[in-house]
Structure formats: structure tokens, C-alpha cells
Amino acid sequence: MAIPSFLDWPFFDERHHALHAAAAKWCTDNLDAVAHDESRAAVDEACRGFVKRLGAGGLTRYCVRSDQGGVYADFDVRSISILRESLARFDGLADFAFAMQGLGSGAITLAGSKELQSKYLPKIGRGEAIAAFALSEPEAGSDVAAMQCRARADGDHYVLDGEKTWISNGGIADFYCVFARTQTPTVRADGTTAASGISAFVVDAGAPGFSIAQRIDLIAPHPMATISFDNCRIPAHQRIGAEGDGFKIAMRTLDIFRTSVAAAAVGFAQHALDEAIRQSRARQMFGRNLADFQMTQVSLADMATEVDAARLLTYRAAWLRDTGKRVTKEAAMAKMTATETAQRVIDRALQLFGARGVMTGTPVEKLYRDIRALRIYEGATEVQKLIIAREVLADADG
Image (cartoon, rainbow, N blue to C red):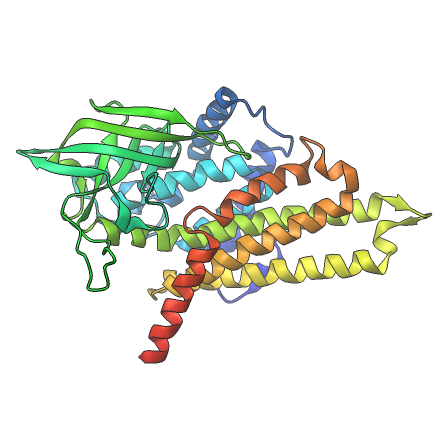
């Protein structure tokens, strides 16, 4: 695969060019676009296999810092985004497996003790352990302040009680970065609850009192579950960062990986555009190729322009974060734009396929299911708009 022209943008340097080429080769050698067996057992096994292969290929090393066997001294969000775009362009489950290695262990990288980092991160980089990020609850998804899962100090341990749901890698993860309330939340003057008094912990899958309450099946299958804590005792040294810093740690983690969600959406959209171009050149209608019709050309032009616009916002956010800038607004813009764009692009591509586009197992049908969840997880589109508006108003006041 040729180096795409977008790598000539000033956001990138030679190491990113080399990484894109290496990622493209790895994807070509290790992935195919044929739909997986989507039974739960098959998806679990495929995800485990991807983690091992990504580790063997050196890709998951980009999810950890160099002092723990990774590539860079800090997260390089441009590299993570290049990898996610490349993987998503080939296989959504492979992208998921890679992304969760970073998101699931990101809190440890950002705020964990040296002991925690040394215990977990080298295995993540080698693809020898699977991580999960446990923030959402049945009544606390976008509204983190509504969190009910609790952790109380008991000597040199914490005791966790409650549930987490919509947990990616739930059921196959070796450990979970869990966010739980350790202090009574602050109620503001207007009656709303502040997202304070939350702490972060690493909980091993085999910890007493931890269980998988329910496995969850999605339209685009990947491992997901509701997890439960019933008098779950964990050593106090498994806390990530200071007590009460959990919300800040979670938001710092999401600021990094929210941008990479945008990159995955760009990969899905690019795959759809590639399929649309092939279909329009191959499909005959009224004695002509579909590509000869102006309506088709207008659709392809819109798709290509929207993909590039989403890509531009994505790598701007990644570059800003890598150069030390605060990117809450830019990451939200990228995530919102890229996921909504990908939904539109995939829908147009499916339309060009006609009835074949909705046949189970075809690439565009799979993409149609793959993209839908990205508009919700790590902050739904509506939440991104609230974040953007809040930041815009703050900028205007400042």
C-alpha cells in the first residue's frame, strides 16, 4: 500500500511515515476483510488472538511508555491514531483489540505507582495480558457524577461493592481499571452533583468478590460485559494515583484515546470509500458503469471530502496533544466529526451496493454495524457537543 498523501501534512515526521508503512504491511499479512464467525466464543478467541499477534508484531508497544517496554517516553497520540486508522480500515475487531490495550491500561500509565506500572504494563506491551477500562454503570454513563460503585478503606485494603456495565473486554480481561466512589460526592448550589470523591483501582480478574454478572451482545460483536463487586477486597497499593483523583485520571485517559476513536472512524470511512469506488467502477447499470453517472460522482466527491476533513481534525487533535497542548475541545471535535462523518460515508457506500449492501457478511454491511457504537462510546455525540460548547464559552470569557 502506497504512503497516502495525508502523511505529508505538517503533523507528521519520518517516524510516522515508517510506522504507517509497517502497520499497512502488518495488516496485509495478518488480517483479511472476511467477516469473523460472530458467535461469542469465536469473538472472544479472535480478540485474544489479535492481542497476541499485535504484541508479537510490536504494535501494542505503542500503548505503553518506553520505561515499561514501550516505544516512547509518553503516549504518542499520532502513532496510536495511525495504528487505529490502519487497523480499522482492515478489521474492526483488530482495531478494538489494540485500542483496549491502551485505554484499559492508560490510567496505570498516567497515574499508577512504579510498582503497578512494572506489574502490568510490560505484559500489555508484549500482548501477554488483556486490559479493560471500567467507568460506566447502569445509571452512570455520560453522567459520571451519578456513580454508585463504592470503595471503602479497610486497613491496608479497599472493599469494592457495586456494578459496572458496558465494559469492553469484560469476560476476557486479565485486569480492570475500575473507578469507584471513595468519598461522599459534593452537591453544588444548583442541586447537581460534582464528579468528585472518585478513585481508581486495578482489580485482577481473579480477585475474590469480583464476578462477571452478564455478558452483553452487540450488533458489531466484541467482548463486553456487566461486572460485579461483592465485598471485593483489594490491596490498598492497587489504587491508581491519590484517593479522590479518579475522575481527573479518567478524563486524562479519555482525552488521549477519544482522539484515537476518531482515527478508527476515519479508518472505517476510508474502507467504505474504497469499497464504493470499486463498486461504482464494476457495477453496470443501463449499459454504463455506475461511476459514469454524475450522481455517483457527486456522492464520491462528498465522501472523499468528508473523510479528509475528519482526518484533518483527528490528526490536529493528536498533534496538539503530542506537543503538550490541552485538547479537550479539539479531541471532542475530532471524535464527534469523525464518527458522524463515517456513519454518513458508510451509508452512502451501502446505497451504491443496492440490495447487496445489506447482505450479512459483506464488507459494507459489517462496516454499517461497526460504526454505530463509535457514535456512543467514550462520549456520545451529544456529550461531545456539550464539551465543545463549554470550552468555546470558556474561551470567550477568558
